[in-house]
Length: 76
Image 1 (cartoon, helix red, strand yellow):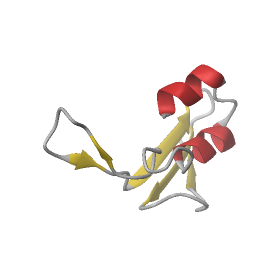
Image 2: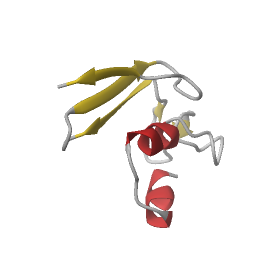
Image 3: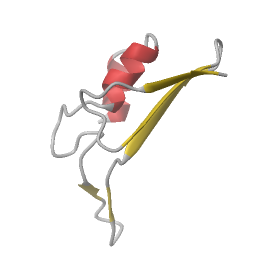
Image 4: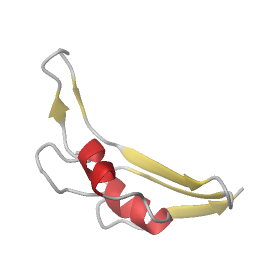
């Protein structure tokens, strides 16, 4: 899902990155939901997110399911 989304449009800013990381588009194979890889005996699930603007040093992070959840914000 993330590859297709990035092919559609570049990330504009941290707001855009955060919305994409928390997207449920394409459920049940969205960024936030469990995805079972047929090559692996284990599934993966998102349990948090981090987005950073390396130009400004602004860092956004949050634990757990981040759909419609505000990020904790830091300036590095």
